Length: 273
Length: 343
Image 1 (cartoon, each protein chain N blue to C red):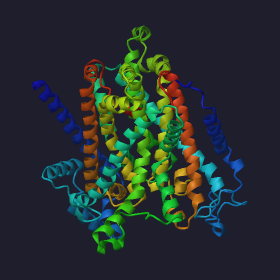
Image 2 (cartoon, helix red, strand yellow):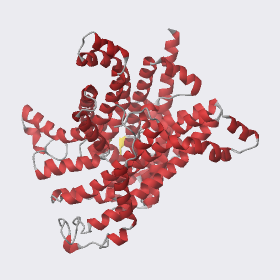
Image 3 (cartoon, each protein chain N blue to C red):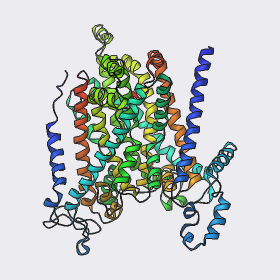
Image 4 (tube, rainbow over the protein chains, first blue to last red):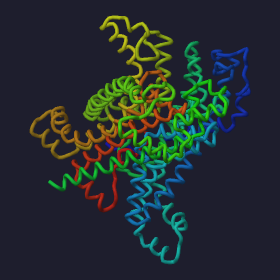
């Protein structure tokens, strides 16, 4: 009854198209995404404005591609930060003595127990005016715990291997062992969590921007495009709400499909959706 | 017996230490924030205040003292049940939360019950009909729904039901006019306001737990005792509901214990979108405007709930499967297995 774990081609193609569109945003979009066309605000989709315009008169079609750049960039950048922290923290914890290991794992449990939305709101408040960099850092430093735990478990199993003991006895430093022996070994099993992390980073960014704690309206992302949804609701402008959301959900679906595929590859006995 | 007492004592100690560290971290981070708490106290007027006036106000609120002194004062007061006043509402923080927490509990509580029963039922239903059309539709729908951010789902629902169809209210917990209506009409009004937020809370989580139930149940169905049950002539339905369910229940309970904080976190966003007067929208406001006392209290409360339910799940797990406890002593702990997929 087991399904074969196939490469999610459809998701890859859709994701590829959207990413390509975002990369070539300047070529695709005819209009300047930040230009406030006051004569044409809240216009329904038409020939001139393929996806319509928002309440400020910005062309949604151009905003989608330029905003996608920001959203995906934040997703990737935040994940890069959290992966880096997780790999170093997890490896240190895994290689350390039992006592230090226990303390380090307790710390992650306490951090995991604080509601992440509250920490993010906090950090965001500290960093003040938010831009792409600051919001990536905030999301990055709050979402490394669960990856770190997995890394630690893997390292714990690897540390007793002969080649690591050999490397150690020949004087290999911690980072040398980490990058030459540990990382290549545990990367495949951590990969799916990293991909899932991209997904949650994009969700977090859009949620924050939506409730007004993330990117301001001027920096276009899929989340900040939705942040003036309230005005759109009053005028019954469905396209302002639906179009960015559909793109957002499409990317999230494709990314999580990819993540599930990676996980399935890792553990073939696992049943897939 | 004494071993058991030790076990619970240790758990309690960890719990208290966790809450303590939480207060410490939250306190220091909030004091480092560059937002001026006077702004939340005086609002716009703060712009017109002179430096001396600001200083006097700070002195009065105890904001000029060293951070450590402030923390110990807060801790001391907190032990006496005094959590300070909310700067924004100029009202006792505990009282204010008391007014609002009921709304959150109604939303979260009803949501949790629906999720608890719904995902169990849905999961078992799907497991009984593995790979049927219904099962596949539910699974696909679930995968899609789990990728939809809460706030967007809320927006779409508002768009459809409040703006286009105009059948449900879009914000608040009750209408302004509801106060002078009779009991039944007021109740109806309350329910109408609850439908959309509740739908979002339930839809976001229902599928995820149903899927866990489905997979766990499928594992059970492949066990030998099910074959035996079928061989002696029991219906598949009877085997699943009478025998598999009993084996599933303990691990399901521990998963649902971890689900409590997740659902709570979900209601926070939902409350903000629907301007539902619960503690979630309060938390957002207080973080935004540096309402220190409020924020501290909310963080501590949420933290207590989260830490408590995580520990409950851990204890449940250890009771179900003593190997987990044994494993802890050998290779550290592994409680977070359920969390592997970040939500």
